Image 1: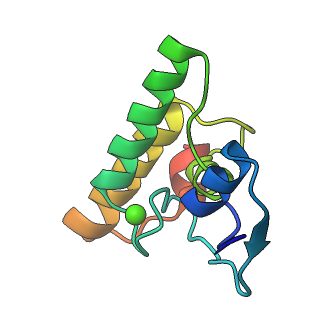
Image 2 (image 1 turned 180 degrees about the horizontal axis):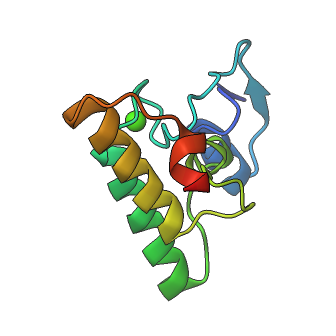
Length: 110
Ligand SMILES: [Ca+2]
């Protein structure tokens, strides 16, 4: 039996190895764009999303935990793509580097 958060690597491991998975309470509520789940939207998230997307193109498999993919799909297209990585990078650059308060809505509708 393996305990962990829903969408975590632990859950993936349990599924892959056909072990019983017990979800922990309070599965981390992810901030939109925080694909790696470290609590902040950064260039690392953009990098992670782009790497996962590129890998999915070459292998045909998206090797990203569900919670990560959900946080990564910032444009709400239902899948994780290069556009999501781009939006995450711009969001991070605007809010953290340039200090311009920018919302996802501002980025994605413009
Ligand atoms: Ca992050």
